[in-house]
Image 1 (cartoon, rainbow, N blue to C red):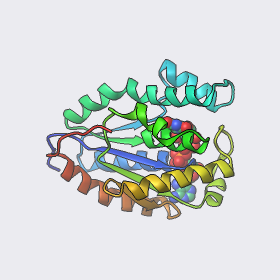
Image 2: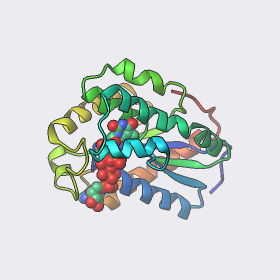
Image 3: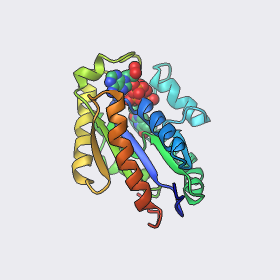
Image 4: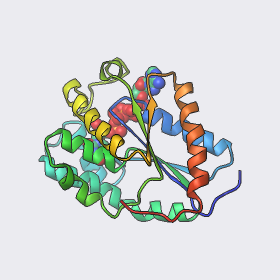
Length: 210
Ligand code: T5A
């Protein structure tokens, strides 16, 4: 495949257990097999010091107020902004498991103001496409290990889904809804077809920020 001038920033979003980790890995492998220069990233990135604090919070071994954890999730993305920008400029397509929209959706679901939550995300690289893996929460709860981390509760996930729905509705130019109730192979088929188009379109477009 012809490599573009810049890579595309591809983000997968969705509620807990919607298949983002599996699909982002499968998509990354698919792209590598097609000869696309690609890298797989995950947020939160639990490897940094901030990521370690986030991990402790998610595992319920550390308490933090809602504003503080919100800003830590955002800071975790800012820690990797330059790396993301440099990789995209070097022609690498990034497949990212969660991004700023998760930051906003989970905090708004707790009752924080949408604009307040979005403000510190401004200036991060804007994705070329966001794929929203959507399935009924009841179905996601049947999947392995649901309930182990802090946010894995039905009522909370329903609120998160409604924020994602709202963002998806308002940002149809970059958001694409994917039926996450399908088999993993079919989800990947849906994703990969669209992603190849996005990569082609992104290569001559200037990078934008949120
Ligand atoms: N968070 C995150 C914030 O509050 N603010 C932020 O800014 C950010 C970035 C951790 C938590 O942090 C919150 C959101 C989260 O609550 P996480 O580590 O991404 O974020 O947590 P999860 O979303 O829970 O990640 P998971 O790995 O648990 O879920 P995934 O990635 O959506 O799902 P996956 O691929 O691991 O699959 C889950 C299970 O379902 C099966 C898989 O085999 C696995 O067992 N599965 C399927 N089963 C049937 N059909 C399919 N199509 C399937 N796809 C996957």
